[in-house]
Each structure stands twice: as structure tokens, then as C-alpha cells.
Length: 167
Image (cartoon, rainbow, N blue to C red; front, side, top):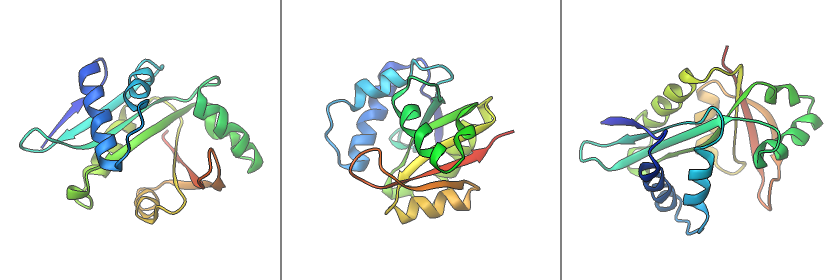
């Protein structure tokens, strides 16, 4: 297996967006433009894991969470409700972590996430996952993520907000 950086590689970022759509069986037209837009955010870092045949089997990326960014501005009021808004003051936001169903449970997700966070210079990291995604919840909690808020509704679906101290 081989890991590659997404930073500065628009074609690879577009391929990662296609991998995301395939993995989640989604057809949103804004995925590739959103992935490209995020790649221009301060502190952006992203990685993909390729199998021995060069096929993408994992993806992770994030950036510095800042006021004015869509998700930052949704998270701050939700975390203020639970007195945890300080998590966003010097924060790396993990935007996406996707692992192909064929290799889930093999450690690909842990390696990708650990590598991504090792390079982050922020004090904390945050991410969200669907409240009904029990596999992801077990994964994050097993990897030291702390539940900051449950029943967070950025849209019509419930999510959980997790945080991890980095320094």
C-alpha cells in the first residue's frame, strides 16, 4: 500500500471526491468543487491510501477551523451550548475520513487519521459523524476522541461532535 498527499494536486483531489461519492453512494454535484475549495483553506492537509494496484482505498483531509467557514460557524454555537466552544479556538477540522468497505477494520483509517493529525500544528482537532453510524463512533472513541456534543443537527440528520487534544 502507498500513501499520497492531496495538497496541491487538484487532479488527485478530484479523484478523491469521486472515491468519496462511490464509497457513500452519493451523487451530489458539489462534492468535487467542495473538495477543491477546501484544499485552499489555511492549514489544509489531505492523504489518500492506495492499494497495491493503485486503487484508492482510503481518504482523509482537513484544515484549520476558522470563523467564516461554513462548518466552523455551525459548530461554534453548538459547542457554546455545551460550554466547549474553546475547542475551536486553535483547531484542526477533520472534514472527511472515508475507507473502502473492502479494507475497513484493517487499520487504514487509523493510519490515515494518525498521519494527518501528526502534521497538524493546532492544539485540538474536531470532527463530526452521524449519530447512527455506530461503526464510526466505535472507531473514534477507540482512537481517543472525546464526545463533545451529541444530537447536533447541521441539517435534517443528527450528528455527534468529537474532539481530540493534539498538544
